Image 1: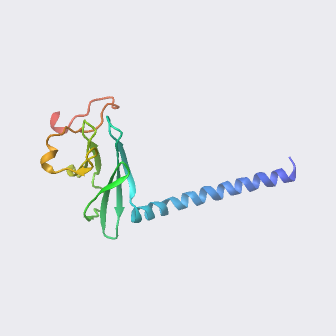
Image 2: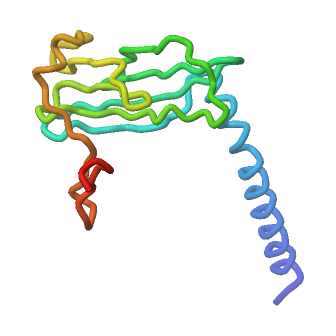
Image 3: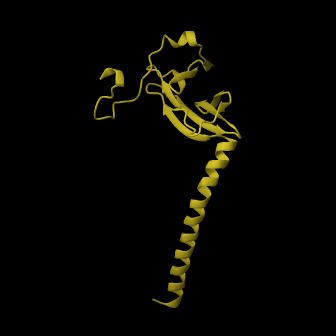
Length: 151
């Protein structure tokens, strides 16, 4: 191996190491900046029967948290300011109904927001009773999931 080739190989290894190091250092900053500005991506959920999708973002403010729901790329909901728990977990979850038209945001097991993707409007609590929601996708699980009360 000539001297020039060995210098190129050493230079490549150094550049690769620096690039990996910068990438590892910049990821936490990206998480912080995106969490403050546009909201950090938590979940994207596709409707089972339609071409709709819903995205859930979590925006961290100084002393509170906001959840943002986008349906088909359009922001349809921003939650009120919620207090930041010490663990920052609200058990946030998006759920589509069986028709693939209605998506709801669940926080701490409570349905806090509903949206009709076909009619492009928020749904009321009285309308929610007509729709059947998937509790949790379980077709990929090897064993049936049971609630503690079902045992």
